[in-house]
Image 1 (cartoon, rainbow, N blue to C red):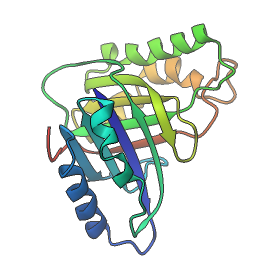
Image 2 (image 1 turned 90 degrees about the vertical axis):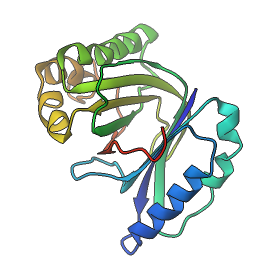
Image 3 (image 1 turned 90 degrees about the horizontal axis):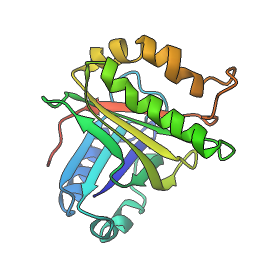
Length: 206
C-alpha cells in the first residue's frame, strides 16, 4: 500500500470549483483505489484549501501518475504533502464522517527511543477518545512543501464536533501529547510548524 496526501493552498483569485473538478478528474483517471478530493473545513491550521488523499496498491502504481501531480495547476499557489507506506493503525466501525491529517516533522536531533515514545503516545490516543473511528501513524518516504515532514498522523472522526471537542480538548491530548509540540516544554521534539487539515470524509472512490 502506498498513500499520498496533498494540501493545496489556492491563490486569492482561484476558481475553487474549477480546480476541484480538474483535480478530481486527474485522480479518478489514476489507478488509485481510494480517492478523496475535498475542500478543507473551517478551522484548519496551515491546512490548505483543498485536501487530496490517494491510496494505491503499491508505490509502482503511484509512480505511473506521480508526474501529473508535479505540474503546475492554475490557481494553486503552493503545496504541502507527503508520500508514505502502510504505517501503524486501527479502525472501529462505522467509518467517520470527517477525515483529518496532521503533517509534522520530528527534529533530527531526537533520539530514536524518544521518537518511539512520541509515536506510542499518539497511537495511545484512540483508546481514550471514542470519536476517533480509524487512525494511522506513518513515517514519510517523501515530503514536499513547508518542511521535510517525517510523520503523517491520520484519523477519521465521527463528526466535526468529535475533532474539535473530545479530541483536541481531551486530557490525554493536552496532558501527554502536547508536550512533544510545546516549544516551552523540555521534551519538545516537533519544532517546525505543523499542517493540521481536515475535510468531509466523502471519497469519490474507495
